[in-house]
Image (cartoon, helix red, strand yellow):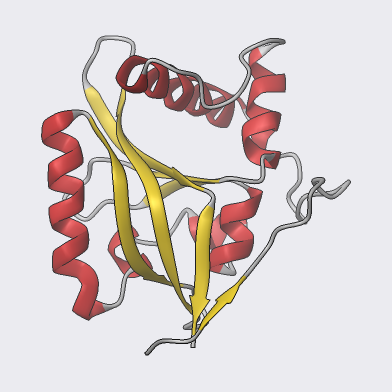
Length: 174
């Protein structure tokens, strides 16, 4: 039997989410965040966050929200291109490290086939809302993700330009 340790994020975001607290203000991050939010609404018929205020305010709320939000592009070997503060903490990376990481490395080699199948399923359906799987942080900490939503990110022309995931339920494995 596997021992589980539940990790709970603080109930309020810290004043300075990370050493690069203003990454969410960068124009390309604000733009990408809008694609994440619009695509989530398109596929799931609901909003990931409350969509009031400016696009910069919405980008800040996504970056500071307690749920994990991550995404990658559509390269042959997709590179992570977004991780909110909660994701950076979970994967134990800073913004620059995260954005240089091939997304396949978020899973151990033994779990990469299962991960690829999950991404294929999401790609063909537009989204899935039942993902459960083991992931690994930069320092080798293993954690079980449950009830994750994975969706295709679409550009303004309706073409897929990435995939994203969000989840709030996860636990460290020992």
